[in-house]
Structure formats: structure tokens, C-alpha cells
Length: 151
Image (cartoon, rainbow, N blue to C red; front, side, top):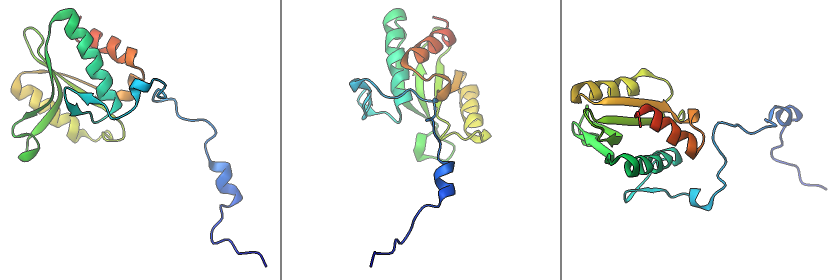
């Protein structure tokens, strides 16, 4: 006698499976794009942050503007009301905060954006925030940042 299956997918479940993969993020093709990613000695939170750091390194070579990664403000993660700036670019005249946001972590609720806007306002920094699916390749991140930083 054949063993009875404990669980099986219904026919309808196989129909509901997507046929085409999402085109939001570029498929990793390059061996250098394999995690873990390091930005200035720290493990990067995402591939998109790593791509932003590569773009900032190019911009730093062109302009001489320095930048920092994971800068704590108002106590960082250790205090209530503190925050972490992903990238702080030392642009002439006014420093610029870069906030690449993945849709997985930043669901569109206003809290994240408002907190970063408040930090930028109090510190008198410029804020550039974008969803990372708008820049799906390394080159698009570089072009976007050059445009936003007026390089």
C-alpha cells in the first residue's frame, strides 16, 4: 500500500504561482556583487547602500568631497529620538544626508521620512531620500547621485 501524503498543493495553488520574476532589482551577475558588502570597514545593510558608496567614491575622486557612513545623530540608536544617517556628504556650503530606502524596510509610513526631515532641519543639512527600486543598477545610482549633488 502506498504511503499517504501528509500535504499536497491543490491544483489552484500551482496556477497562482507567478510566471515572471520581478524586475525591480538587478539580478546579481558580477562576483564582486556577492555579499557581504563592506563600506569603510563596516558591513553594509544592503546591496543598494554598497552601490551608493561606490558612486560616492567616484564623486569623491572627481570633486574632493568627503563622506561618512552610518553617522549617529542625537544619540544614534542608544537614545530615544536619536537616528542614524546612512551617508553624510560634506558638500560645499551645506552638508547633505543621503537616505536610500528599500521598500521592504520603508513601507511608506511617514515616520521614517519625518524623522529624517526633522534631523535635516535641526542640523541644517540637505536631505536626499529615494526608494532604491528607482535606481536598479550601479550606474543608475551613480547618475542619480551626480544629478542630485549637482556634480
